[in-house]
Picture 1 (cartoon, rainbow, N blue to C red):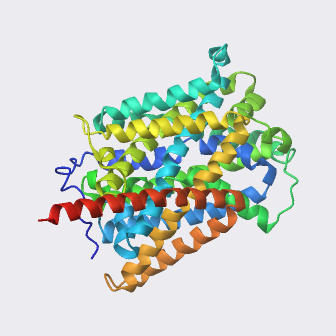
Picture 2: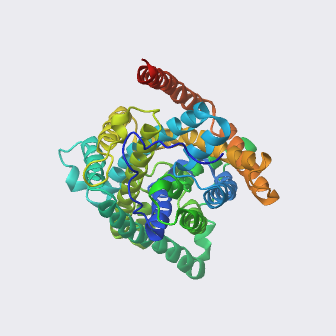
Picture 3: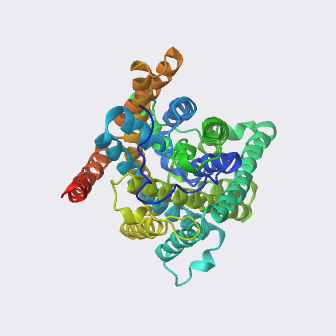
Length: 450
């Protein structure tokens, strides 16, 4: 019942499983700790202490979703990952809509990361942008990592591990600064406290925005067919990566909020750079910003890999043109990578009419909304597997219900405009799905004709 259909029979044997535990874990942590957390203090500043409560809700919900993906990978292994789970329980249309929205969110994420990396790079080396439009730098970043991924997993995997390690440097620096101030000058934490009143709508909105920084807990399960010992590797990498990221986020999210005045933080283009400059002197933050840029670049690499793997899966399941499922000589989905590079570039150019913070906030909420159908239907898939008796486990049912409840909560909190964007993006894919079904039907009819 849960086995995926043989989607690769028309395209030759599946690609070899080259992704191990450390690359899987780095993919989870690397895709979660991207640029979201480094821009998030400015985006969440208007919400005040509502943002802290929202972070608590988001971390709890993200851990529930991580448990959903870990349980699916361990108890119902499927080489097509979430797409296969949803198709087995809810049909091909539901699987397509979820995968389509998630696919869109992947390359929109690449655009968002490119914008945020450019913002921090301007803080590191503003002289580089003399006469060079920031949009051009953002486009260059997108295409550099398309090029790296065209070389295949042997090239992109080590890049992911190295950048994931380096991106922890600014996190550690912020935590050390926070601990040092707590003992040396505790009054600093009370001088600039936010004044926004606590209110449920504000908490829900802040929680949904914060979810953008936690997106990626499902990263290890997307390329399931190429993971070594997937049944064991994916659950451990998913839970370890999500828990480690959540602990880091909780540790550092409160520090800029309490140390920088609310209005100043809301206007910041690079919050952690401004924090270190404010507390330790001018130009200190520039060096941390360099590691933030590395973090964003590593995340851009990871999401480029993830998006190409998802594109390959959809193409090999005949819901996207088959050309997007073809590999080059190095095992990379070359046509898929070129297409997502073009789409991400277009999104970057469309949003450089906004300020960097405004563009980041808008893109992050659209990405979050586009991820939610996959989270909701994956949680529902886990519950349906148990309900239909594939495996009797009250624990798995509880995990599925918790994931489903949080997904619904996030849908409500995302707001009207991002929700309509997600609805519209999903609707755009339906004609493509219908066209692919028509093409398949004609091919079957031609094959069986006398």
